[in-house]
Image 1 (cartoon, rainbow, N blue to C red):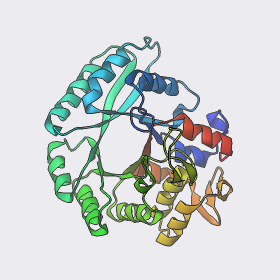
Image 2: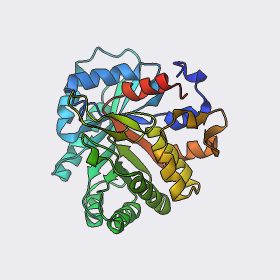
Image 3: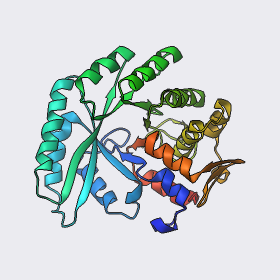
Image 4: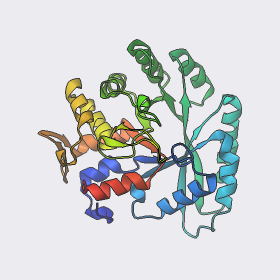
Length: 309
């Protein structure tokens, strides 16, 4: 992949811009706060910063996060740290902590601007979505992580997300093979989001552009498994949004050939199926938002090595 943003195909920029939320604090990387914060600062200054999304941190560690940012070298040029937080068991207290955090940084004269811009919360039922939504301010961008339950329950959860004006979150992997949902289930989730006009993000297991076999952690004795590719997931979402049939989207998610994807100034071609630039841009803006990854460099390096862009 060319380092120069201008050299990257316009359709690839549309698909990848702001796509990768950095979750270095979380497994399998499980970095300390200092390392994760220093990494994000470096990524913000890198030539690939146009692909970088939000920094993900538990609300319980916001104080540690704030202290660590304060120890960074003073920033002479304005930078923007967009943050997404994961609340704990006491949602009311965590919402107060978020408000206080944002207030302190809003009042800061420093050029490094930091703000919590979204909340990601695990839920167990449609009723819980409605309950937490009554507590979270309506203007707060909120992603509800939908459990992998029976299809009827998932449909109810996504309908509740839509009814509350929230967004959905899908877990696409983990540290063991059983944590990776089958392509059919991923397509089922995305189709429900399309039907309910619900935007979504993904998390876990999307370290590589195209579906492929990899170790699931960074440990020497890690199990291996087929991991979903982030190009597969986000292109299938964009295609499903404009009417692709479910079985064809499953085939797209199962695609393991890098050469099957071709980006140009007008759009992307997968096999004989073309998606236009406008549809890619609309999907990313309003529907398929981002994915959380404990590594930013791994996805970027894979894109470079595979020459997909």
